[in-house]
Image (cartoon, rainbow, N blue to C red; front, top):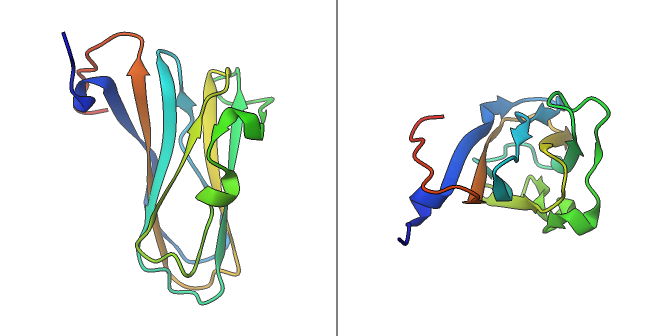
Length: 141
């Protein structure tokens, strides 16, 4: 039986909507990749008010649910690049993404602003697809 995308994709909050007004790193919720073969972090931003702010994205992985002993994900285990998922003041109202194809069970993304003194609205979700069991019936997570 074929399933539509909603039956094969689970979305969970990664970074709650926030307006960042300084250089405080925004750390995503830790994602448990168990049961899914495709895991993607998707972020969207509003109008980025600071004229020289940059936002660097990094991805960590590990075997512990709290990511103790975690390490940075190797480029070969990413779909896309951290520089491609990073953004600047010029990226008003854009969406960025980065995928994970590594073997660790838990992952997290950190967005680290630099030179940010204005309002930077950011939010992110995790999209998990290619579940090992279908359909994915969770409507609220």
